[in-house]
Length: 296
Image (tube, rainbow, N blue to C red; front, side):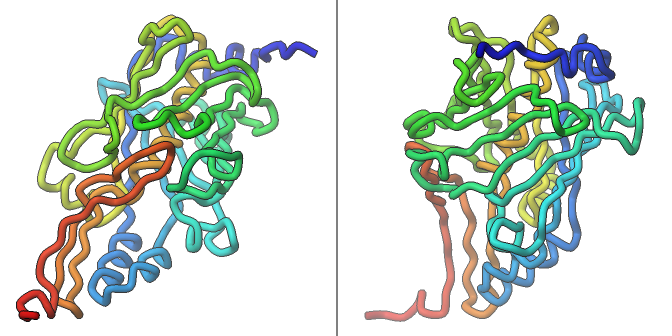
């Protein structure tokens, strides 16, 4: 039976919030507990300790003129086989989207992401990242985002559709080739319709101050911007908004990792991730170490 798109968001409060929206700024909140756990893990050269301090993400979303738009709160298990402690950043989660001007307690959208085998070749369903966008009840699906077979090759790519199995109505593809993440520049993902016309973009913004650099080094806190055509359908805007968070979890949760290993007197920094067919491999530089001055 042919699927008929439901007017799940077109007639509700999200329609008023997104109808004329062309740009949103997304800021992830800084978590002190997470930063302290990462610092402790670095000091004793035990990366697993950092996961013990992993907390659920929270985001503030603003219009480009600074007005409040949404609050986004992650719901996920701490322990368990698909929890944050074991599987971050590929853990199972739901993101609850609130609109303060509508209701501080009732969701207007819910983004649902299953646990996947991350950082490996996107050659089968258990490795291909995906996210389902639902309305505020969490029961009526609005859109679906999925990583294609082999993840776009050398450039990260996502497909956006109404339901799994439908033809994509647009794609999201990174400008980067073989390299993703890193704090030295903006990272742009172009949104194009099925005819190849650009209808928007998602940008992970580079830190603009020393304070932002320090915050990103100490935690997972990032800043994103999303732009889309003003006349784009509300359901599609909501789905693309959800895609921004999938991109964050896929590529930017561990961006700019800096390790100061006091025990071994070694410092390392992750420059970026090398990317190929869904696989990511960290590219790091390091200096020091107890044996660095020893001769063979």
